Amino acid sequence: MARALVSLDGLSVGDAFGERFFVSRELAQSLVEQRAMPRAPWRYTDDTEMALAIVQVLEDHGHIDQDALARLFATRYRNDKNRGYGGTAHDILQKLGLGLPWREVSAEVFDGQGSMGNGGAMRVAPLGAYFAGDMTRVVSEARASAEVTHMHPEGQAGAIAIAVAAAWACQWTETHGSARQLFEVVLDHTPAGATRQGLERARAWPLDASPSSAARELGSGQKVISEDTVPFAVWCAARHLDSFEEALWNTVSGFGDRDTTCAIVGGTVVLSAGPASIPATWLASREPLLLRV
Ligand SMILES: [Mg+2]
Image (cartoon, rainbow, N blue to C red):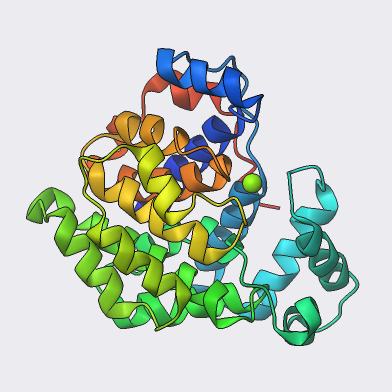
């Protein structure tokens, strides 16, 4: 649980930091170039709201109880709908709030394909931290956490990849594993499909290339789906396993779905770089977390 809470801090600070750069492209670019600290408070978004629900379910049940998770997603949504949820998420969460069964609601969106959005991945790093040490469990629990809203296999593959990356990052202070090893373990566990193919391209993209070139090659969440978000996020995390600040400044410079890429990278890199790697001013800028509802 302690590891999950560390990841949650990294995720929420990343989410709230990235969100502050949703300004015009020119302004965002110049702020990033100057590393101008966004003005506080930094309000967190749906990435954090949903991660908070996952953490509460883990605390109460010790595993992903999917019915409990669906209820908590819906409760948090009802309490505060203004957190930047996507259109389909609004639809799903309203239906869950009406008590409709999550398995049907999650399966029926996008003409019965289910969502391949990046929402399963954006909220899952604390789960990877919680089950670190048992990768089989990390994979099954990550899939279970995604299914509640993302029935499409790609939506689940993204969640699995990020949970595995977070679990691997927990051991980093002892192993100092390489970026290559991070990609190996993530690829070993991510099911075949477009997200995994993107991860293979990310592994091949040089780590000394610029984040903007990686964003062009891999996508940085412009389509808000797993395959165009997760590979770039893992590439950014792999590049800066030892520095939360460097990781986030580089991640946000890919623009795209910047609250979510920064949430994923923040929730992962804080586990390798350690909780003290989040600057105190950044933590203080993020609005306080409403941990339980
Ligand atoms: Mg968001």
